[in-house]
Amino acid sequence: MTRRSHGGLEDEVLRLLRSYGEPVTSRQLWEAFETDRPARTTLLTVLSRLEAKGLIQRTPAAGGALFSVIRTDAHTAARSMTEALDHVGDRRAALTHFAGELDSSDLDVLRRVLGQS
Image 1 (cartoon, rainbow, N blue to C red):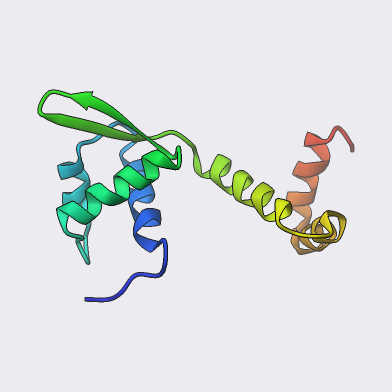
Image 2: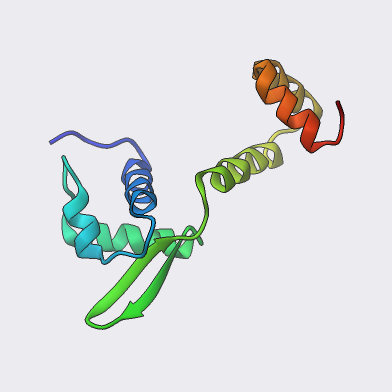
């Protein structure tokens, strides 16, 4: 059995939930693991943590609960970038370095969003 990286199981659970596109039970989610299937109790713990972080929603259902993703990948990525900026001393320098890493199509998107041509 391979050991996942820190946060790896949470990332995998989110990926699986997104792949369904609709609410699923913990059993359906558990069965969706192709390799390194976690213990059911471990999966339930991860689902509880993701719910506490506001990343997934738990909806009571007959015989258990249904789980679904609240945020899209794009929203999660944007939040991560914002949180990274909140922890850096020089936001301007960080944004400058970030922009320097983008390709021209990404820069075009940002220009359009900011209302520049």
